[in-house]
Structure formats: C-alpha cells, structure tokens
Length: 174
Image (cartoon, rainbow, N blue to C red; front, side, top):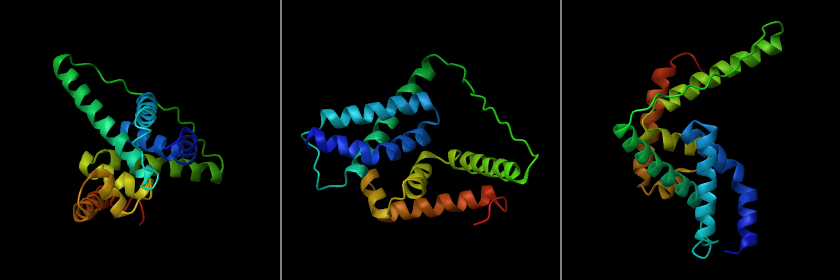
C-alpha cells in the first residue's frame, strides 16, 4: 500500500475506527492513544497491507489486539500497585422547560442506560455487539476481525442480545 492510499484510508475509516476505540476504552484519552497506535501500526506495516483485503476490518482487529494487550498490562500493574479509579463527571444540563429539551434529555438518558448495559457485558460479548451495531459489520466480517468461526460470532451476538433484553427490560422498545 502506498502512503497516498493510506491517507485515503484514514480519511475513509478514521472516524469509524476512532469511535470504536472510544467505545472499547470508555475514555477519550485512552481512545486517542489507541487510535494513534493503531495508525502507527498501519504505517509500520505499510508494505504488508493488502489493498485487496478488507482494510477496515484489519484496522479494527489491530485496534482490538492493541487494546487487549494494554488491558492485560494495566491489569498486571493494578495487581502490583492498586490505584483509585477516577470517575469523570458529566455536566448534564437538562432543562425541562420545552418539549424538545425534554425529548433530548430522555434520549440522553436512554443512550446512557443502553451504553451502561452494553459496557457491563463481558468483552467476548460486548465486542461483537459493538462491531455489529456500531460499526455495522456483517457476521462474516466480525468473524474475520476477531479470528473466530461465524457460528461462534452468531451465538455470542444472540447471547449478548438476550442479556441486553433482560437488562433493559421494558425500558427501551425494540
């Protein structure tokens, strides 16, 4: 792959990959680092990148593997030296003076509720859900990205949907 083609790839898939990094990490700072490291890996492997293959899927799998490695490293460090978790407070200014503001607040509340439910899933269920719904990948693409059989991806999606249906109950309509 050429540098020009890589620039086009960044232009095409940059936002999608960044939002995936953000969902994986849950933090803008960590997402920024993961996003940069993903593209740095792509630049280093520029000669090995095959334009005929699904570049987006490849980059998502790179981001996923980098994140898993970091998570493993952070877990090991926390065992050695426990640290307090910092909780970022969101400034939510929802005024219910108008119907539009009320619907915006309700949408934000629903989004937060759904995000919390998805984030509570184990990684092996959360990641296929994120790839399927957020990245709009097909089951075959997810299987390729994660290095799993399609049947395993389907069963994990089904299991995760069941858990989410149970957690969300009647809160969110299908």
